[in-house]
Length: 420
Image (tube, rainbow, N blue to C red; front, side, top):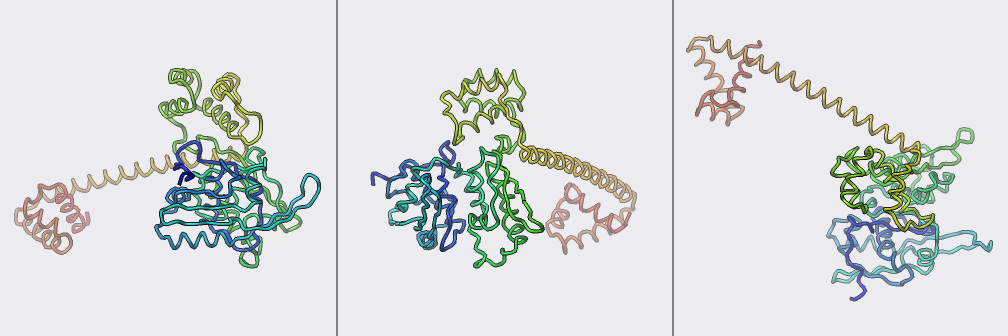
């Protein structure tokens, strides 16, 4: 087929797409969206992003499954997931600019077709295609990030929060509105009807997973009316690049590589590192990269020039409170880890020294014994080892105490026998 979408990998720059808000803020009218279904929908949106008006798209099944981190070769299970997806109906209800109210309902995916040659065809309903093509307000969804999610509710909250990554905060949602967005049905899931359980079982774990695996940081804010929670909003901040790296602070080589990948000449990159602190470079680079992926604002035609200007004038924005909290927690955790490792190292050294002194004491006492006593002790040790450690018994019979391992076990045996 000539219209098969080319293979895409998630390690390239095009691993994200701007998802139309109309396809995020949508109410599931019937059916339920599990984690696999949510990931499949986003994968379909990703593969259709360059031609959203096109009615039918084709993709290799292996590329599709790779994108959603689906490792099973169970085709029957894949077909069942697709079947569930096409049976989910959604509805929208909004006010147009001409003040006319628009209500509609359709399936979230109109068709999925699997061919035995490994090709999957899929189609979006007309209205969903219009949302994908025409809506200006969008949320940046990373497919690389999506692969890390293990909770359906966390992925849904991530999609709804990422819309507001440039605003710094979501609107206030009523509890009912938030449940609708996350597809939590009180009738189907009565456990979550009390807000306490909804918060403890869904909101808090979802926020924790988003902050752990995604490219944003969020924090819930609760607004009370008397004793009841009336509204919930979430502060949203783009996670600095340094948070996405495993190392808290990159070394010179990795920072140089990152600057070159951004577009710096290698000599210019080295000059930048020599002139500025690492934190200063990272802060301005993070700011520039956040502006490049922003869904609003003027187009930046010369990213390298923009970055050099940022270095000269320090474009770093004030660190959002949520980022500050996360950074302080990371620093505290790192400090605690270092302290724990230091204490463990000291304890290990202390035990090693105690064992050495104990072994020396036992060895001196053993060497002061008569030959008959030594023979008796060795025979007792051999009998014990035949019952508990045949390998040590064999090595002892072959070479006596010449083996470091055997001698260590032998003197430990004496220590336990003598209780020095």
